[in-house]
Length: 269
Ligand SMILES: Nc1ncnc2c1ncn2[C@@H]1O[C@H](COP(=O)(O)OP(=O)(O)O)[C@@H](O)[C@H]1O
Ligand SMILES: [Mg+2]
Image (cartoon, rainbow, N blue to C red; front, side, top):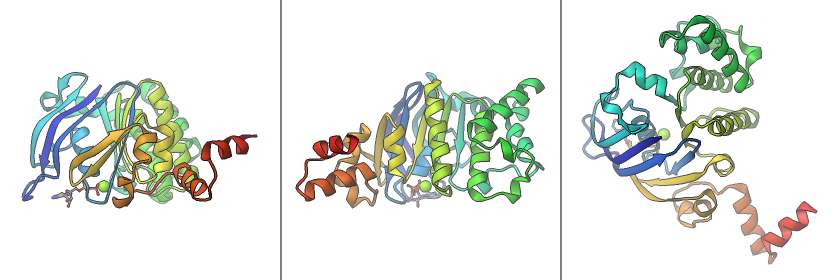
């Protein structure tokens, strides 16, 4: 269980908080999506949920981050890293820069956590396999595509074995195939009991894998609910959040005077 209780966070030197009174709780196996306009606080929420803010970013935090019922503020950094992993939008910022191969890069995290050698090998291979990049194992991390780097970063996260994952626009640089790999990986991890927070612009992906979706506006939770309810809400359009294609299709069918449920049934036959 990962939970935020009444979280208000202000960056160092900022005049106003970037998050206001945010409550959030992710049970085991839950995937919660975060959407909102640019600058609405999605990345900040990811930083707080992963324990990096304020620990690594400075600033001031009101409220609490709870990991499995314990206040994260009291836990040492290496313990946090083994419990909650974060993946950023830009993969180049999260590769270590000190490894020569993708394999070493993925093994780097668990090695630093002091995981025994045999287990590092097993975890590294499982993580490369999970995101479909076993064939990149011998490549140089700096000489692969942005999409491939993102998959390497996610594999590196998986190899640390965290129970909680925070993904900040993890597919921003991925093509549809890479996006599909990430979404399948997230769904498989959730099925194994991980709790996952994912900020994304790709609402089709969120509609497929989320148990709940939260909408942020100016650092506050505007509303939240099931993907079906949230994505059908007209307020989203004003925030610039794209509708999933199923919602768009349903609207187009209604505009054309067709009943979407009948049309969907006809399509299935
Ligand atoms: N390092 C920072 N210092 C001060 N303010 C920041 C910093 N990073 C983001 N902000 C501000 O916090 C708010 C939320 O930003 P962010 O979490 O990046 O939104 P999003 O990810 O939804 O685009 C914005 O007003 C942004 O300007
Ligand atoms: Mg962001």
